[in-house]
Image (tube, rainbow, N blue to C red; front, side):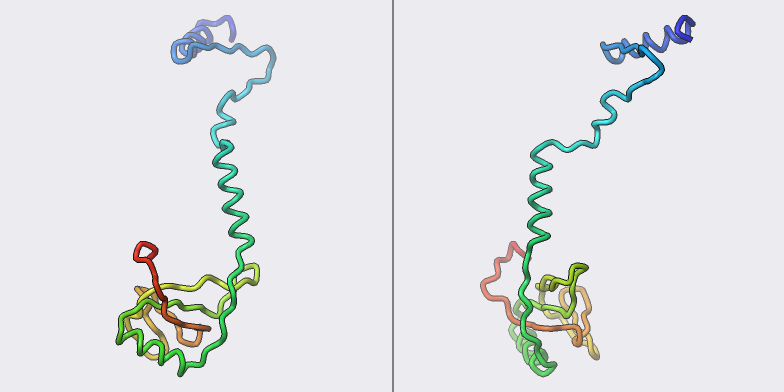
Length: 140
């Protein structure tokens, strides 16, 4: 095929689109720069490693368990004063660590569920609930 007109046409097209022409010296044909398309540069790699390290080593303290009456009192006051709440659920992540608290406004209640922002949570799943003091609006 090397001496055929079709092969000459293919080589000519390669030279036109890319001033470099590569000729195979044996049966092996390398993919060239195609194999490096998914590679990270060093800055991205370093940022990714530090982000993963921060996620793996974070420690979230487990707050004391509150009774349903204490939770109801906090929710009543939150509804009256329209303040932000921090809610820690009785859930653990896949590594057995406490999950992060949910920050949001109390928007209503039905039976044994409460509405925080636009998500419903069971009251029995709540471990601790308290008001958020000095919360910056840009973090919402």
